[in-house]
Amino acid sequence: MDANKVDQFLMIHGSKFPIESIPVVRERLEHADTTNTAIVMSLDFKDPTITLILSIFLGGLGIDRFFIGDIGLGIGKLLTGGGCGIWTIIDWFLIMPAVRKKNLQKLVMYVH
Image (cartoon, rainbow, N blue to C red):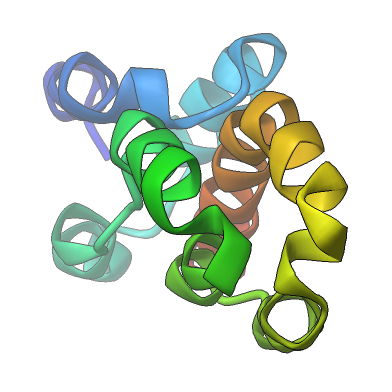
């Protein structure tokens, strides 16, 4: 992928990845095969802020974990009422880094 497209991608999606992984993301994108460009540009990365809002209002039901693809943790939160509220409060601080990590994993899966 050329440098302009990489810069454009990072301008749009940079906040959706862990800040310490941005150089790695840039390097992987620059060395990515041009056939993967369309796939990478069309990937749906979850927004950490939206996930935090979901966690604040619906975290006790596990909706935040279902939203990012952690089905097992979502079921656990649903069945325990968010760990009697404790797990819900802890997730208010942990959900944004978890979303960024999931987004990075998705990108790495498609960019070899």
